[in-house]
Amino acid sequence: MTDTVERFSNRVENYVKYRPDYPREIVAFLESKCGLTHETVIADVGCGTGISSRLFLENCNRVIGVEPNAAMRAAAVEFLAEFPDFTIVDGTSDATTLTDGSVDMVVAAQAFHWFDAEKTRTEFKRILRPGGHIVLIWNERQLDTTPFLVEYEAFLEKYAYDYGTVRHENIKKQELDDFFQKDYGSAVFQNVQIFDFEGLKGRMLSSSYMPNESDAVFPTMIEDLRSLFAKHAENGRIRVFYDTRGYYSQF
Image (cartoon, rainbow, N blue to C red; front, top):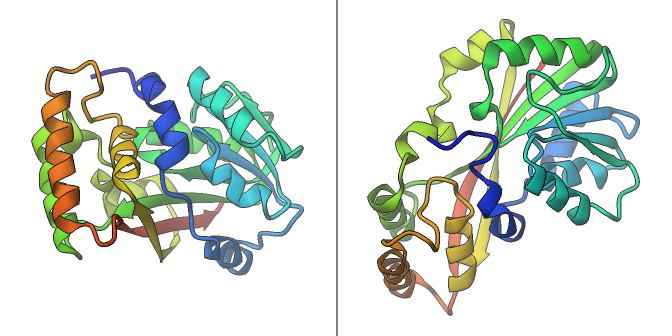
């Protein structure tokens, strides 16, 4: 399998354009459950192209992005250029390069399933100030709530390389229990993306497990996707629904 740090390097453009955002209700939720304020300093670990960082920058938080992939770091700098309170460093979940007790909250959005959980827990505790919080967030595509989503899941299983082994849904309760090692809370928010065909294609290609343009199967895959879109689109648009799941605990 491609090294986890580099497997998204050829997906950056599609990732920026087509990956889902995060519901803004998350901010109010974290205000009530974790004491999030405008003064909270946040480390966004595995921040990728900065989609999750933007959620908190819009709340006037200082955000330090931690991202090992150079192409994604460059994309994040461009994507978040309007926010002076954003900085980004070359680091990993278990070696962030941040100083001891330097942040109030550590966020990992769409990233924790790539981490070494035990080493990550030690590092997160090191960089957190006393009483700080860890927040894990995922957008989970609904698999069977519409006829399109049922067929799209079958389409992905047909063409993807290692879909079954790298999906973040593989993170189970026991793994979360082992990571937090204390009581933790959770919440689910509803989320949706609306695509034309090019948007759906870009969303698919933003996933590291899908064949890209250099793969021999690519033309056939795109034609199958086009047929799937044509079958289910309404007024030239398709809806992709997500459950946005969050887990949080104080450390």
